[in-house]
Length: 51
Image 1 (tube, rainbow, N blue to C red):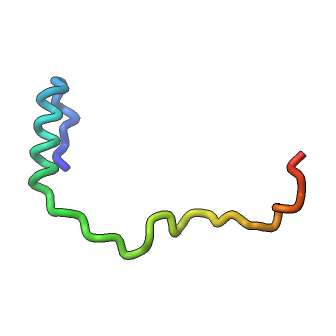
Image 2 (image 1 turned 90 degrees about the vertical axis):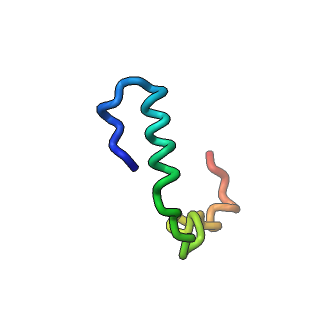
């Protein structure tokens, strides 16, 4: 995306960002499912009370 740090006017900045987003190449499809790197919850603690 274009560097818009130097633009102070928010409306102008928004315009520039949108234009840059339209020009940018589309992102590739995901190869792995979303959240695949998330820590998996173990089912061991089901029988134990928390407190």
